[in-house]
Image (cartoon, rainbow, N blue to C red; front, side, top):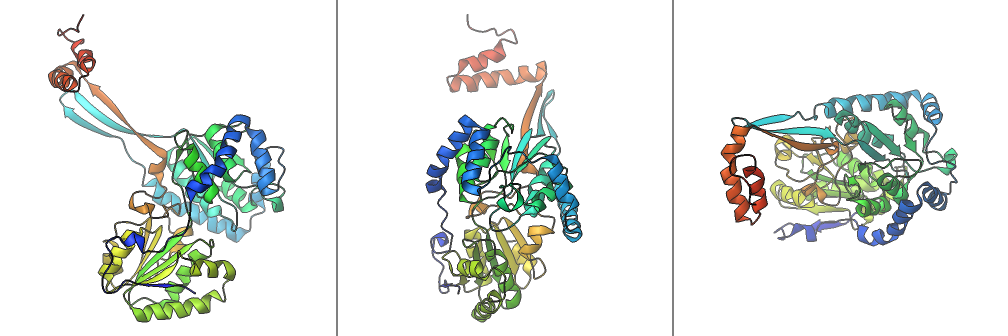
Length: 435
């Protein structure tokens, strides 16, 4: 069901060339979303509605969801689901509230200060995927950090569902209601990203677009980047587990399956120095997959080229492998897991020990589950309050402090052959400027 990669003996110099990864060609998809984005740019809501009819099979009179429908969805929500969502929101708020940065003022010289002021973006468009599953948790993970950052204008979009009279899934709408979001659109795919980037008659343009989606969403984000800010180009979900002989194969197999359940392109990777554990996990996968609901989807994901059991000589070698892989989600199931986790450099989120599975992070850990994929965790972070803030330097110098700096500024300006830069300072004193 799942392939093996044997790296025992010696690790290759560039581990990235031998580690499994899903095929996710955003550049190829870019050519297909380009005309969609441009059409929305020029024709606005009319184009959005046409693409919604074409791709989702729904004819919309308006892309915006009536506020009454949002509240109706909350009223009809299963009480147990409501309780779980409310606790998800509460825990996420605890974590994200503490991420808010404070302004910092540095006195550079007497009379001269630089303050770094953190300012939220004014308007954010938040994308919540539809497709093979329902993601009210993604509403929480996008909205909570934006609210804690102080964003004043928040709009959520999620694909129109033919099964729900052209509205997004009611659980998505209910989550929006719990969070106080009443600006919601029944739009998905590339046309949704273009709607937020360029604006339409029904939706004001955003400054930033966040949220995971399929390859068309990722390609549209790449296309509009620069017109609007984006969080990332999210690819298929990934889990990597670094485990030794102390790990429970039942737990490891269950965790690999939990992420394979998302999509046939989902990646599930076990890195271990224990051949016995590898055998036992493989056997557990066979047993557990047969009993899971989405058996066909999970089987394809585990059998795909993006999933594997990787054998190494030691936990130290395993650390080298997982740092090279830079997984979206990384579990550490080893002896002294906390110490091993402290040595990880590249991961979207790290889950430590047998009682911190990725599924906890998906819903109720308090952490954010919108994370970098495709190896991007080596240079990018997951969604957080910082994603919605901009740092602005505020410079304040008095006359004396500027006078003290003027000679050096003039020297540097002339060294760069930009004499007018220096002249702008000299004009404030008796130095004058060239006539």
